[in-house]
Image (cartoon, rainbow over all chains, first blue to last red; front, top):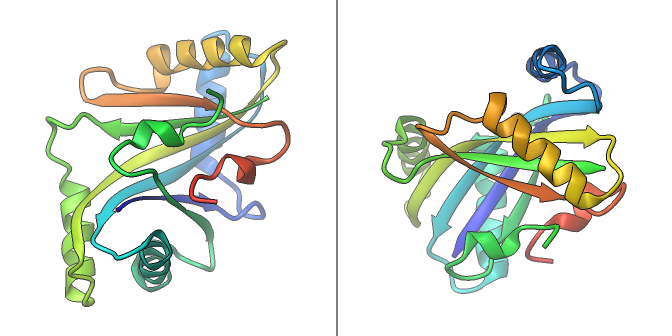
Length: 91
Length: 91
């Protein structure tokens, strides 16, 4: 089962890396940006009997290791079998 | 317009960070993982007239700064207005 975890800094935490990238883009002429934040993506292939089981398992991984709950929020997305691309928004 | 960029190492490139995280999870008893790769997520708020314009603009940012085309692949997702959560898969 393919699972994607998106980890972002909590909105109350200053995103220094995001600010730096936003400024660099501004320097290249991209001044139509209102906000930019940088986060992490982790894509996993988990052996699980159901999407719910996979989600539960990965949620446990996030709580135990992948995310820092003091600084970060995360979302877990179970992707349609075999195709990461199908989960893309904005089709 | 909210746009999300997902940046991953090309599949031909060894993901050292991903291997380390996978091993750390194995050490915590998570041995049901077949694969784990770590990538970057960048979430932007772009001023654009249409989703297509936003996507084109962010694609240009990726080519010029955000991604390294030698090492990385990226996908650009335009998210439904005002709600990042709606773009989550596995609902």
